[in-house]
Length: 322
Length: 265
Image (cartoon, rainbow over all chains, first blue to last red; front, side, top):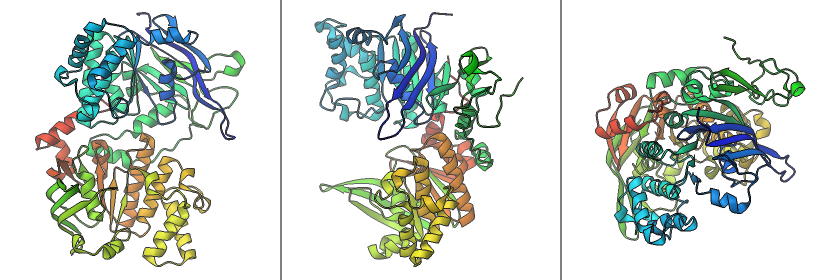
């Protein structure tokens, strides 16, 4: 196995108490690796902590604990200046292609800015590099004099991707990169991200609430709930043999574009499990371990490269032993 | 029950006219569930609003054609007559529940209001029915939750409240415009089940507008596919999914992400 490009260990983010409310563990001891040229999908519902995880990895969010190492270099203890220098290796593509581009900047300037900040090419070569970036995302370099509003949502997202790629990063966090787009445009952007990965050996952390999209892009999938990763494994294993009851519940809820199957799904009894039921419980976990006694992680291998948390199992639900 | 003929919708801005719905026709029978799918800008939401004669926020719109509801042309009614139809006979649920609720009124008051205005109930009768309705849409402890304000509810619960308001006067037709688009997938499943159950229990017709082929698949009997303000294809839901005829429908269905489709390499 190749050395991971990104290694995240016990990453935690706690939001301080506000207006008499207790502190929120937005990200709670999250650990995973991303190998070079691979995609990890991070799925979960709103408030699960997936976006905060992405921001914490990129050092855009103060962390409470844990470590993040990119290309073998620890980011969490670095000086601000060193983190800034590392930014040319790690970039961000955000959900909203309408608000993430400056409306009064021409595309040429939007793409030139990161090149100037990181001094990655000589000044005279900037126009060539900008044209190259436009071609990379399948856009005509002739339109770089235009402003963002002159483009469709899908074209704007291509420009956002081109800007992220300007500095030749190794790793890109894509946070809901296609959720604001129509299905046909979604597919084009997903295909583009796929091609770019092959061409440039990029690694992605692909954060999305849409489980079908994640299936199409990810090699490995992490399912988040309540700030924790509750299941992590190769995409096929997680989607075809989910073990954590929350993963099962999430997959079950995805509507299928097949009338007969979707009707049957809706007609089936509504499961409404209480995943918080066991939270804070002491004693033996669902796998029979007493983690508080032996300080072992609440994390259990269920197959090769496939593991689940024993947290957030509804009362009465136990793992099936094969 | 609903027969729409030659419907057009034109936005009027600074003397310019932009036609967003192009002479379309469709029907919805009593108790039937009918879907409208299309991408953003296809005209599906404006079509839904036409039936309520509601112009999108901050715009001026000119309707054309006929919208016959039980034989009566809604486009020929006075605004005052239309007010009696809206909410009472035809009700609508929108994508964003927070924007549709009044933030400074309790949810109970908002449902009471509808019942007193349209159903001529007394305050006490209305409150009794409000509590029943909140229970019907799956809100636990409805007596107490009726006194809460919208911000005290989660997104899914707010959508339930909105549905309670919409069905409060037992309308003949419920129009739902992207009712689950802003919700998490597990909450979406609950809301879709709720809409199915209410439709059955109250015998309402449903006009469901969505961009999501997964959502539409299980909810309706017939579907209209819209593109650029026109209906490009219509038919029974099973036939349309199994054998789409129009190239646009084929392209859309081919692009729909499927949970069973793995990464290609």
